Every structure is written in structure tokens, then in C-alpha cells.
Image 1 (tube, rainbow, N blue to C red):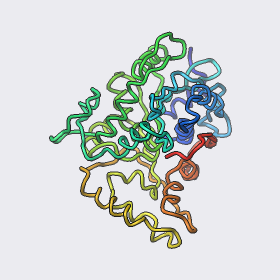
Image 2: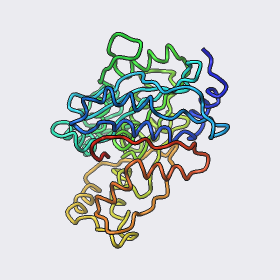
Image 3: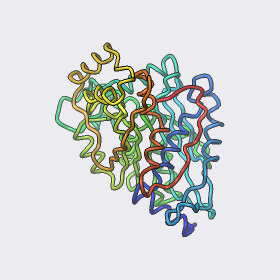
Length: 362
């Protein structure tokens, strides 16, 4: 079934520019639904409800008009047994039932996951002392360090990629559980040519930068559009340039210039320079933490953010008597990213959904 004229116009915007960046941020934010350990059992009901409750997709020709249609869940949400990672797939279909685009969405860190889940996430976030080859990461082999000059990603990021790509769930209209690569292949066989946005915030943003090329390798011919928000660096310069930058025509990497998380680990020493001189009333970085951060500057191997599609959002320090952690949370969480992106010209107006997590998330 062919797309409506409005749906076709919207689909062209998905692959040609960042018009829908706030839409993608909304999808990334919804991934935190019920992320608190005490509520995660309800995510199979609550997250689909949050997706289907999203506002309609804006049209490109007139941002005050929308594309008649609806949001629908396609696969998942799939959650690891210890609540370390979550992945889901949804799409927006026009009034004729044709998809404008699909989205693969990875959740960021849930600091209240507790127990093994939190330990797994900390390793995924901080396991950067060892890098593994991208070729091994594609095969879920995260144990063997790479000592050669090649595209590499952090061992912790490799672990996160292996975790989410092994998750299984039943796809809408299917009977058997399948992993994300099989889901995408099945989806595109039914809806050929539909662009697939891969998105996430924080740890989900780092996952975006590796999950997008993983899916591109596993599902040849798919039109993959990575959109990462506040991502820490996933790999070295060769990974950033030869795998990510070379692999995608119109990616999006969204970075608040005062957010410390994207500095890790490409610009570790820059973390200490972010806020103190602009907010004298705020508490400086605690001495013990500053020592750890400085140590990371020489302890970890080289990392780099992708260069293609990066938008640096002009950060603004939150003034007042804030702790160092308070400033970190303010700069890193989705609301500030929503405010900063909303101020950019040519960005579709789209609200940031309220997500009941029960706890703070990063």
C-alpha cells in the first residue's frame, strides 16, 4: 500500500535532515518507562501504551499540521533478565496503514536497576580499558583484546551490544520470538524501503553508534538512520571514521557542550573544565573524583566521537548552589536536550513525553 502524500513527504525528511530530532528524542526518552526495578515487570504494558500515546508525526511542509496516522509497537519491549538493557521497535503508519519509518530504540542506564543489572550497566558504561576489534564485536566475541591498528570498540560497549542483539521478543503478527536482526529483516520484507531510525540516550546513545552498523551488516540493503543523544564514545578513531562515518549518509549525534558524558572517553581531561569557571557558586568536582578522572586520561586507550552528523548544542550552566552531581544530571538528562534542540531552526515542534520511571535515569 502506497504512502499518502503527507506520509511520503515525512518519510523523505527522515532520511534527508534532522527535522524529526525531537521525535527521536521522545522515543529515546520513552525507553526509560518503568526503568525502576520495582516497576520493570509492568514495562510490557506501560511502554507500548506510552508509544501509542505519542502525538502524531508533524508534516515537513507545515510543522503545524500532522500526518494522519498512528504509532504502533512492532517488537518488544525486550528486557534482559537482570534489567541491564532494554530494546524496542515501533513505527508510525499513515492513515492508509503504510509505515513512514520504523525505530529501533535502546534504553540508557537505569541507576536503580540494582544488583547484577546495575553491575552489568556499570561495566557497559565504564569497561573501556580494553578495546576489541569491530569484526569480533559483530560476532559477539568481547573477550579477546585487539592489539593491532584497526577499528575497535570498548569491551564494555561490546558487552552491551552482545546483550541487546541477543534479546528476543515476539514481533507483531508473528508467532515465534526473534532477535532484533531477524525482526528487522522480517519487517523490511513486508515493508521494503522503509527507513529505520536507531536511537537512544546516554548508554542508549553509545549503543546507537554500534547497533546501527551492526544492523546494517546483518540486514544488507536496510536504510539505517542513527540518531544518538548524549552518547559516550563507543570506539577508537578508526571505528568512528571507517565504520560509523563511512557507513551512513545522514546520521545524527546530539551533544550538549556542557554535558560531561559525551566527553568520556574521547576528551576525559575536558570534563574537569566544564562548569566550575562558569558557576562559582556551584560545588567543584570532588577531589577524589577529579583524581579518578585525571587517571582515566592516561589509563584508557584512545577514543573518538564520530565526526559526521554531529550537532553541538550550546550548553548553559544552571546557576545557584548546586552539587557537582546535580549539575551533571541537569546537563545530561533529556529535558535540557529537548530545550536546546527546540531552539534550532527547522526543528519540528514535538513535546518531550513525561515518563514515569519511579527514579532518576542517565
